[in-house]
Image (cartoon, rainbow, N blue to C red; front, side, top):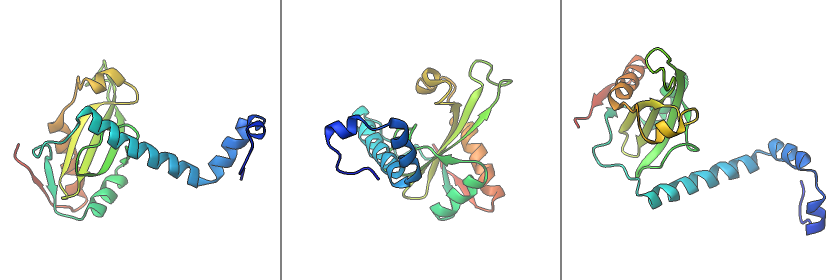
Length: 167
């Protein structure tokens, strides 16, 4: 590991060697992930992004770990790099898919799930944040009902009872 380098020594280092070294030491990647997660919270607070109490759409009857596991088996992965952080949010997951028949203008889609500390969750289907950045931010094809129904079905199929939350 490269340590205690002078400015001249640092300038002479090969960036490819440093990157290779960083990739073999996951502490660097974990530090980057943590830094992005913290910054995401600060940016969301600065923008005034805050979940209203009625944003949750489902109340699964299982521990958060069980909900995350059920969704992970269905292809959901952490989404901390790409999403705002809502107050009380504990878990943020996304599953990407492609649907050119239903959405010819924005065929790259995502099913996005936020799980809150009280165990409730919010789900929605929308344009992919990776492939359709502007439409995603403008919520041009955002659909909470479709997302909620899809996630409720996934959880029920996994044996997790789910109660809808009236909006």
